[in-house]
Image 1 (cartoon, rainbow, N blue to C red):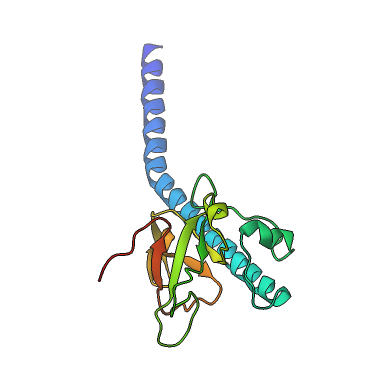
Image 2: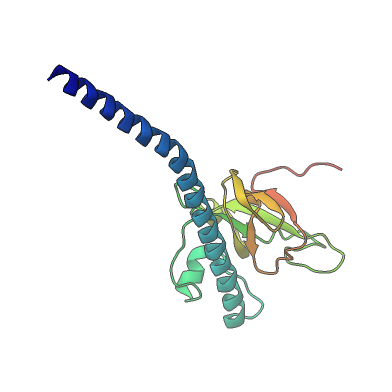
Length: 178
């Protein structure tokens, strides 16, 4: 009777060992798959905001929304999308920096510029012209999007040239002297 219990304990230990090894292989694959799905969702949601800004411009020629809520209120966006890469779900909002000679989305010789403003700070900016969104997450991505490897550089804004990364200024950041 004692030998049977010993074999049973050994078999149980082997089963636990085998399951543990299996989990060591499966968990990283699962985490990678979850991150890839979040990346796809980030792209989808970012493009929804770009399309909403475009629709807003069609409904209000020559104007841009002053907030993400305004896109919803004017029925340019079906629902408010959260940033899938952060727990808070809040975006960095891309606004026109209003810099003379080079505006976000401008074409030609001028370098594109955008100002990233945390969503919760946006109401404090007078006359903000919302162009799109970007994730505040600085985490390295699996996928390369517009030649960028971190989510905070995955920009989604109206008038974007995907072949050129604009000069990015963060709200509250001081201009650097040349």
